[in-house]
Length: 303
Ligand code: DP6
Image 1 (cartoon, rainbow, N blue to C red):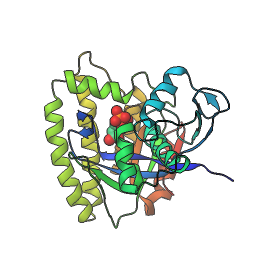
Image 2 (tube, rainbow, N blue to C red; image 1 turned 120 degrees about the vertical axis):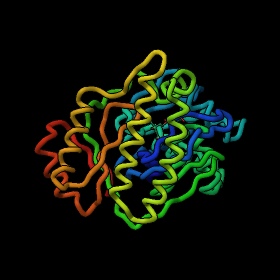
Image 3 (cartoon, rainbow, N blue to C red; image 1 turned 180 degrees about the vertical axis):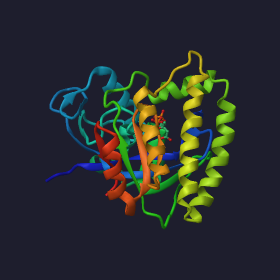
Image 4 (cartoon, rainbow, N blue to C red; image 1 turned 30 degrees about the vertical axis):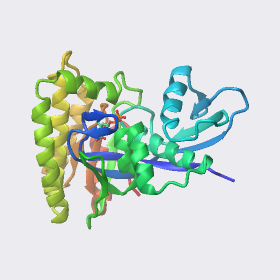
């Protein structure tokens, strides 16, 4: 029997970038995301054959540090006297490349623990557990979700058929984790306060745009919010950037398509890859045009 639990990646249209509190994990600003059903992780837990806890990602045994990290998270919510376990996980998302593998991985892990340890938690409880593992993962439980400053997670409804593809700039593991990068920006970035203020406004505007089914407005906010998040890295000490020349080329391609009436918008997370937001009904045309301009890999993210 295939007893894997599935967790999905999500990409924020209004980003979570900074923790107002670490315990419990609370964001500085409300944020909102779209789930990418084609980018997922699957995880199952078995009894360990050895006398230690084990953790595998894509058949690769993880080192002591990774095992310690994952075990210290799950020990927050699984029974204390437990037998040693083997966590087996597969990512259909390149790991730690800013393609949100932490959100899909954490969701899958929390669901797998719920199953293996018979925790019988509700979705609302699992969402709250997940956010303590990785903040953004709490949004993966819904197709569209917002995560608010008080920690609550709300499902967001839309009549639009929002879709995404990724222009893959680099699939390798990033040099700086989103967690450390975010922390550096919170503590040192001279425009962090500006970011928080803007993100709060973007969130309100984004909810209005979604209620109005105004795709152009949704897209414009998505782009400007992503750029504002990335600008905090440039004003950090030391300054850094997730984006490379190819990321900027990809953004130019998106702008060019838009000029030619193929409506789409970009967003980027803690890595160089560029995600493109469009309406599902335009997918064929957008894919055809983008393929002419982008010669590297493209990942289609939504069913
Ligand atoms: C740039 O959820 O990975 O993807 O809570 O420290 O695990 P931790 O951070 P994480 O950060 C995601 C940041 C982001 C923006 C977003 O998804 O909202």
